[in-house]
Amino acid sequence: MSWERALIGLSFVVALSAAGVVSIPRAQQDSASMTKEVTEKVEVGDEMNKIARRMAVVWFAGQADNRELALYELHEIHEVMEKIRDADPVEDGVHLAGVLAALEDTQLAALETAVKTGDRVEFERRYRETTHACNECHRIVNHAFIRIDIPNSPPVSNRRWDYTTKDADADVMRR
Image (tube, rainbow, N blue to C red; front, side):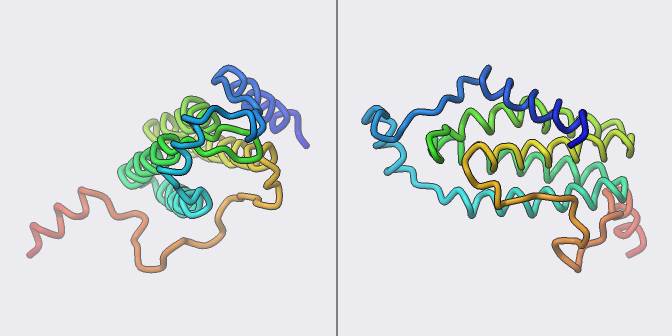
């Protein structure tokens, strides 16, 4: 593991601690937390798959310098994370709401900034850091068998990654 990856992992763990993410056995949770978990059941795996697909779109949009699409997908990722946070699920004693808040405040915020600046090298670096943080979270909740990587094929085949609002405006003018 490179020193950069180790530093990213350490900073993610520190952010989790600062966010108040603690390991509490399920038997010790208060009844309000248990009630919320039952009444607002969210299938975390399904929601995480939505995030993974959208992150793949962010990658291909970023590679095509389609900042509008990348920022849109990042916004949608925040909405999925909000849904998970609101349900306050606990995985192996870890409150995912705090983990997701830490990820949003650190890696995702930095990735969004990189998208806005249009710096491809910085975008790729921040994307890799975000991916590494996702894998660290999976490790923390004993799901290390779930490994996220840089996508090598688009999640859909019928989308133009380089298509922007300017292109849409030009299409309208041609009609």
